Length: 456
Image 1 (cartoon, one colour):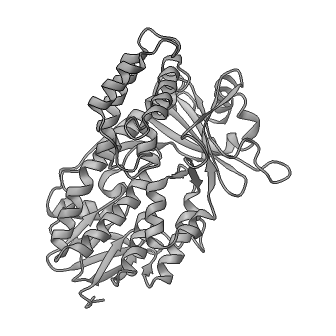
Image 2 (spheres, helix red, strand yellow):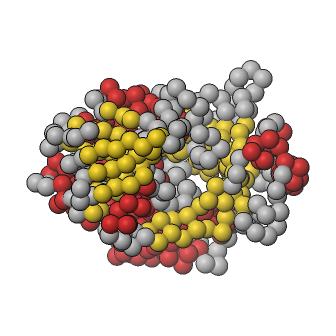
Image 3 (tube, one colour):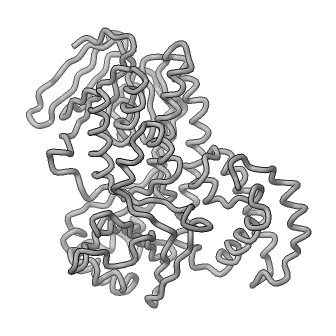
């Protein structure tokens, strides 16, 4: 196979980012071909037990909007107003993400989103080849070999078109690029992993617990979360250390998992009838952060999404960041005269922002498992909301910048660090906001936090 069209691009990976990028580029007039190692999820059993549910935020919705597919995707989502924190005694408290229902996030199942985007990509003119696992690439000769894992048969192609790696954290294209010219790859794994379970619908087919929230059982060094799906189920994810007690080393089977839930997540236990089976059948998933010095190989190949900057899932921004990558790359390909300059400009814009959200995702794990039930944290959160109410364009909460605005991640991280210091200093020694020095806070905020674009 030889690609002749100079406005052609080949995408490796038909997951979320690959499918959305194909839609964006096809609608710009590019001829797009995708190669995907798995089968077509629309006709085959989708891989399960390894996918944390996805939280769609404004960044992701903006990308879907630009691709013209927002309505189709949003039809399969469930609104989440905030974190429903489950205490050990069974009590619950909703901690809102934003000020009202205009500031929410949306839960969507990976399978539903992927199949929707694949269908729309094909409708936009993208050619998709399934059961094609990238094996080797000769960038100089323009040759690539794919393997069909069903029969181990090779499929060779010749290409004179740039390759785009949207094939996830274990990217085969990244490995091929590394062999050609090292990218400075470095991965830091957490000493925690995750396991996925499910809360089925109730007897009448509806949700068994509040559907419009991300449920969280914070227990210090570990936690459990549950996100709603539009068919009335919840995807439950348990995060535990790899060693210690409790850990995946000490909770090895269904009986030990039930004992853990009985002790630490008692109100969730009756909701998960397949706990024994799923615990034993779903292996723990790794959690890590991938760093690269370079994302592209001159004008021959470029990486985006998890293939370039995989992150831990604790800010719910992995997909949203990848979708933002897609919009940025499509824009750079429009604005630059050559593919090589487009790839370089894409890396220059997105790499600092990816590094920022990677750090914020790591920070958010500590917040979710340790701090959401901590009185000092809750007082700071109360002050944060009060400061936002008084100076909404200057003191913009961290979560608002990341989730409801288009503030570049690097800017959000910088402002977050300043705001964290202000909150910590102002609440030190206090148990309420009763004696806050609002005049002094106003001076500090106006001196350190300029008006933020998009805030209102």
